[in-house]
Length: 320
Image (cartoon, rainbow, N blue to C red):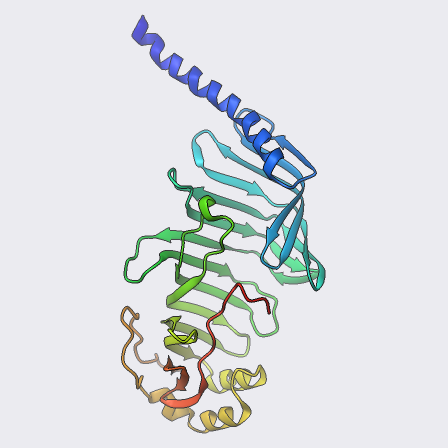
């Protein structure tokens, strides 16, 4: 009889712990979270919070969400799920902006020890800013991975954005691997991780007038500028260079020189030494050109032609 009661006793203990956990969670949230009201989630199968008037500090200022429902389920206690409100307000030094979110949800999974982020996924039916649509249906996934080819903590990020509403950008998909200087997690929530290295084996960009596929590896050099190699596979390299000149990426005189030498550049190889860990960057398929881009010693090269200084590696601590 004693053995028959043991499973029932275990279930009762777990259920009791589950019921006690939510009041403790609400109590702690009321002390540490900036919100107008903090309540528990209704129903026994959701352990979480129902927050109204939540304000979250972000790098640009403060993000205010009128309501946020976040919870975990008993069968997946390390995976938190959230339903985002249809609007949010971003307060910055430049003023207030309204972020429009349509059917937006998020889920994240933390490691049981240390609270490191293991997986994050957002999905939405649409995103806008101050009434201007930015994207239709899409989502972004972030996944922690094991990769010791470089110092830092590695994450894969996969954008799935097939319906962007920007003048120069219609769609973005593929994959990036980022190495950060520290993990994303609860233990260092006040310290923003900094990207040290980016690798892609294929990032597909629909720029409306042309399509691009970017393959390569870039990293932060000792001088604070970008180092590395990129292969840009373009369906219309001429339109790509024209767009780069229009947006100030290439100086006009450099753009004219490069355009005049486009076929030669499209057949050129990389002139500098290979970067350890770089992905394969083969010749372009039929109907495309491969534009070799290199950044080394503080300079940028396009098909072996020096076109100017390499970009400065972004520093999130510096406000633009």
